[in-house]
Length: 93
Figure 1: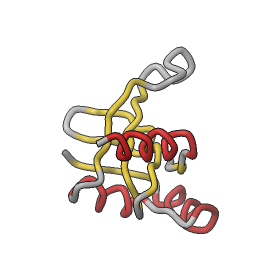
Figure 2: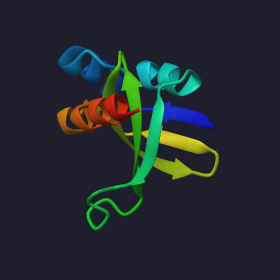
Figure 3: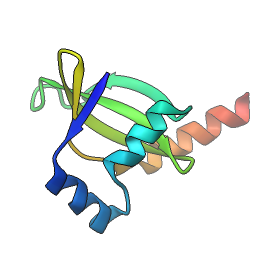
Figure 4: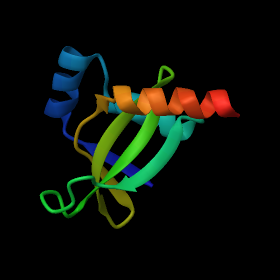
């Protein structure tokens, strides 16, 4: 699977959130993959899905568009609710 993204968006994410698409790439190549879900607002974003990855042990949501063997990553945002769920799930194991 080939990952693609906007250079400008990646620069913006680094400045504003301290995250970058290279972090997602690294998480996916290691053991940071958590889930792949339909977009929660599929009506507004019909072609997007959501990758859930761990970046520095924190769950992040990465909306993407699939085009054949390519994933175009749209953005990255940490998710507090997922962190709570992930920690609860790990405590149960």
